[in-house]
Image (cartoon, rainbow over all chains, first blue to last red; front, side):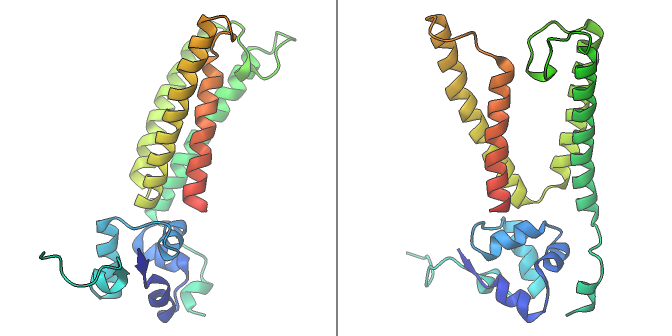
Amino acid sequence: MNNKLKVLRAMRNWSQAELADRLDVSRQAVNAIETGKYDPSLPLAFKLARLFEMPIEEIFDDGHQGNDDD
Amino acid sequence: MTETRNMKRRMSPRRKRYWTALGLAGVFGGVLGAWMQSAQSGDPTIGLALLGNSALPANFAIGASIVWIVGMTISLILYHRSIDDHEERAYLWAGTAAWYALTLAAPTWWVLHRASLAPAPDVMLLFLGALAVNAAVWLWLKYR
């Protein structure tokens, strides 16, 4: 899953360690999410959304366009 | 560079619990290893006691069993209360891989031994093999 975490972090001039501290996770977890090797759990995704003050779908992109009504 | 980046990284309560758990596990393991080695030091044929099959003193066996069970329980509770979900996933997959390694190796070795095609299964070798698989998968998933 693609995400904008690295860009959002860079905009705030935070290191991976600083972001990890703000999320109370390890630096390796931040790195794994940024590089797309790991998709965070829903609670961690919500934590990221609250931290960056934006909806989850603006941070993460699953590559699916439109709604799933059909 | 931000001010916070210049400051020494403060250890969060989660990280303190994490390193306490790992430290405790290391201390328990070190104590057991040293105790086991010293308990067998009278036998000059003994190399690394952990890999030997010679008889152990009863007081050591009882003490080591208690230290292992109590120490591992405390360390694992602390560990699981402190890990984030990235590490939890690494832990779960590492455990699964270790279980598969044991599931493949133990019955195979046992059935070959029953047909006199292999020596008797060695519990410690099986345990260490599963532990090695566990460690390799955990390290790969956490630090790749």
